[in-house]
Length: 125
Image (cartoon, rainbow, N blue to C red; front, side, top):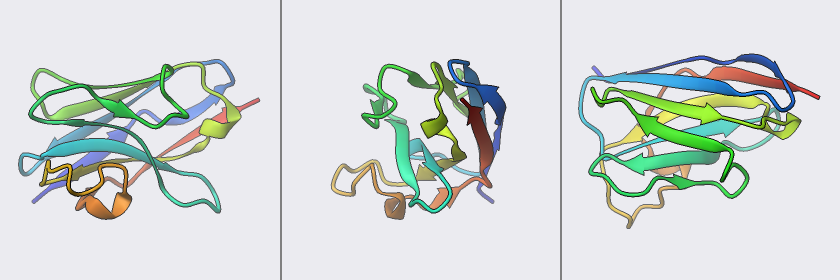
């Protein structure tokens, strides 16, 4: 059974940093990623990487502030978030998919098969 379990959300002030973690189990994945969803908004891509290696990829809105990484055990994916602002307030979801093919958009939530339950990040200004 596939499980993605997030942790690390919370309430922080603008300019603060926060680390989210996702523990994955049940199978190997082609791509792992983080998405977020603010109230009244669609779920949007934040950051991701191919399990086979290569340069991680980021949404323009977080590039230079957020870093996605994987533990040596390869079962924990982290998202380090710096210089947080109110626009980063959202529920953050860990996502994974079997295929690592770029034929399926890595930025679309609809190409990911597995999801965590989400963790709330609130940034006060």
